[in-house]
Amino acid sequence: MRQATRRQWVNCGIVTVLYLLFLIWVSSWWGLIVVPFIFDAYITKLIPWNFWRTSKNSAVRSVMSWVDAIVFALVAVYFVNIYFFQNYQIPSSSLEKSLLVGDFLFVSKMSYGPRVPNTPLSMPLAQHTLPVFECKSYIEFPQWGYKRAPGFGKVERNDIVVFNFPAGDTVALKKQDEDFYKICYREGHKVVPSVNMDSLTREQQKALYDMYYAEGRKLVMENPTEFGKIVVRPVDRRENYVKRCIGLPGDNLKIVNGQVYINNIPSKNPENMQLNYFVQTTGSYIPDDLFRELGISLADQVLFSSDWDNTLYGQGFTSTNGQGKLNPIYHLPLTKSAYQALLGNKKLIAKIQKESEEYTEQLYPLNLNTKWNRNDYGPIWIPKKGTTIKLTLDNLPIYERPIHVYEGNTLEVKGGKIFINGKQTNSYTFKMDYYWMMGDNRDNSADSRYWGFVPEDHVVGKPILVWLSLDKDRGWFSGKIRWNRIFKLVDNIK
Image 1 (tube, rainbow, N blue to C red):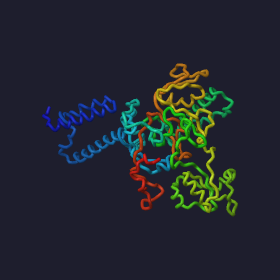
Image 2: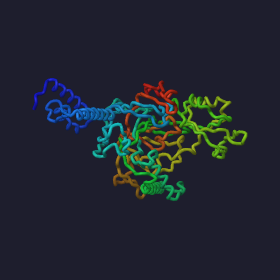
Image 3: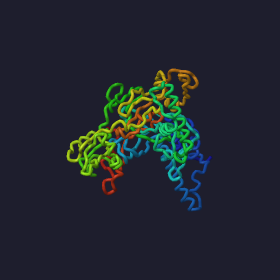
Image 4: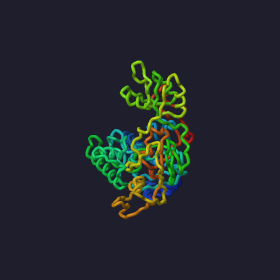
């Protein structure tokens, strides 16, 4: 063994201690296999780590210097992304006006404690698919169970949270923007005759819903041309979503006429919460500068064509022009202040009407006949770790997914009785905490009302800073960069 200098011993000791502290923090003793390599890199140098530096071929030295730098950068980014910070871009308007489409965020993994990855062998900066190659960005083996290192705190009410999409465990690759389970129920409804749910018992209802799903899934699996390949993704490789945490573990939640109640107490609404409205003008179109003043993006500006005349007449829109056609009608998401601004503009605006609940899509749970809608929902209890609930055929659909999918139990209903892991039972004790997430753009947000609870093992982190914000509706020389949002703390956004 070559003689190591004192400086090399000191450097080796510092790096080894820091690495061991890291292993203690993440409780991962598998990492001890790296310690001999650290010792060799600093002291014994039996492995020729930098063989290329002494090569007589200048091309080899040049290429390998780039390879060395790239590998080091990828390893550094990998560990920073997993355990400390991650970049995230807001893709949709579900949190407007709190977070805007085009906001780039630093997401802190330390706020709630970083997760040890389920799929440790993955390419940094790619969530589930490698660009260009269109293949998986991760290797499915090995698979590690859920474990979270200590962080600075826990998810609090009204926190904005980044998490993995719970219903994204199964995906149809040609319909990635759609909830796979909704697709299956929808397709199943096409092939299984519909019946009056009110005339069925809960057990009969469950059997029928199970048939809808089974037939729909079969149809989807048999039609790859339309739906694409069906893939199953581990928790940490599912799409990242960002919403506001409205309900905490153990809370009772309900929505009455659009107002969220937590444990029968009205929840404070986000300052810039948006709702959908139909807006009819007195004849002219709403000018672009007014849309910009109100903060309504081009994507959210829906102008109805004359084909909708009969439908809109039935909703009370009667202002017409000289040809007997309805004056322009828009479908817009509005904050309270934007609503008041339009309502007060009597020269331009003839009528504003709240969007009706007939526009509500299928809600969670998909296999229960609740008659809930997005503004009148629940009551529903949010599962809490260690809490035991009584199971009935009435509430089983609400908790079936947490019990079966998220916590890995088998679940069956036979002869009106519930069986978990082959044993008849009428109760269940939850192994994880769950959260209820909703968007501030309430009528345009696919959130917990549509796909249910967010398990604790799906929580990624907390956005702490907007480091860049780009307005996709503007050019680089006409206000594309939103300078007033750069380096804005997310905690200051309510």
